[in-house]
Length: 247
Image 1: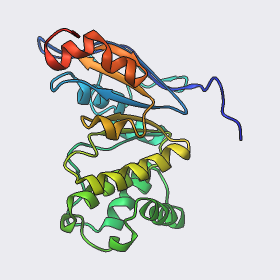
Image 2: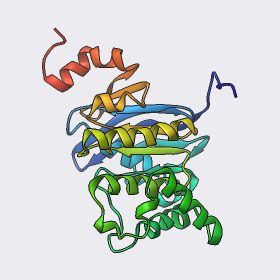
Image 3: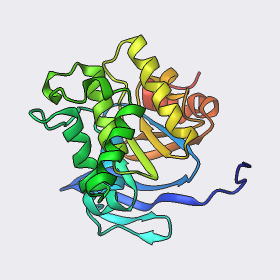
Image 4: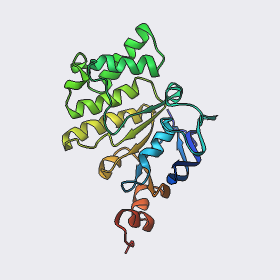
């Protein structure tokens, strides 16, 4: 199968602002994600990265600007509606239903976000647990899991919705080197299956195993966008991270 030399844009933001009173957290961001792309988002703490992901996912509404999924303006749609269109989201701190089993948590994604019922939902749940290595713990409660398994469950719940776009927020944070290798292998497999990815991560060498493009946010604005080597040498990126000149 050949690769489309001009893949369509699957998710985009146009002039997006997010304000909390007088505080502007996202400041006029323009962003486009191609259907076959994996983009890493980097930047210092407080740059607006998670808030921007929230706006893309519909967990927060933009104060100004528009968000489009494929050819549709989804700016007024909430997170549940966007999820059903094909936008999946994982959170930096896992948010499972602790008293429910791993399988039940994934079924919530398949039936709620994926709008599946009966055997179709069950099959989706089993498939996702297998892909994320969680089948052996399917009947354990989510609250009994270690950090790696909880991170995998966060990913599995998003995948159960059958997303075209997956938004990841520091999913490797807190993991050991060995656990990180396992998680990256899972995400690389998703890329090969055609899921477009936007991934916030502070661990750059992990990010670069999946993403061929980096976007740097600072003070709510994109200060660099391009191939990783060029972005990390950009004077504006050096300034954002280190507070000094590129020299």
